[in-house]
Length: 184
Image (cartoon, rainbow, N blue to C red; front, side, top):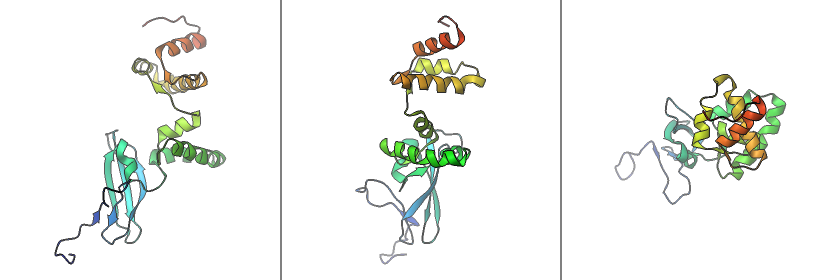
């Protein structure tokens, strides 16, 4: 209990006047972000942000919508999934890639390195997908889908296009497979 006779909460959120939301532990110290899971469980639009008090080592996990997770992060953080992808690369690549990815993420105005942003940074930028093109990509056999997606995005970036369209897909299909563009 505190001096006013109320039970003190184990943690509190600072005033909303702050730009970001951080937790304050019951011991009075800030709780620092320890990790982020992009998809805890089956829900892809919710992330789990894990924080720990540096004083008493009390830990808390907060499930938040993916678009608001950045407000609970106190420094540049890699999601568990992005860190796993980086750890699977050779050490000399990791040393070269980490600073460029972090610079790319900061330039995008965020503090969270996701698996998607890691891929964008490696490709030199991101492109969006038209709904029709995305639906068509889902019909590509799984064994070549990732390769096809990477090639389509690379070609769009090389041409300065902001999106992958069905017409681009048809063009690459004709070029690589010698097939005339046919409507399916």
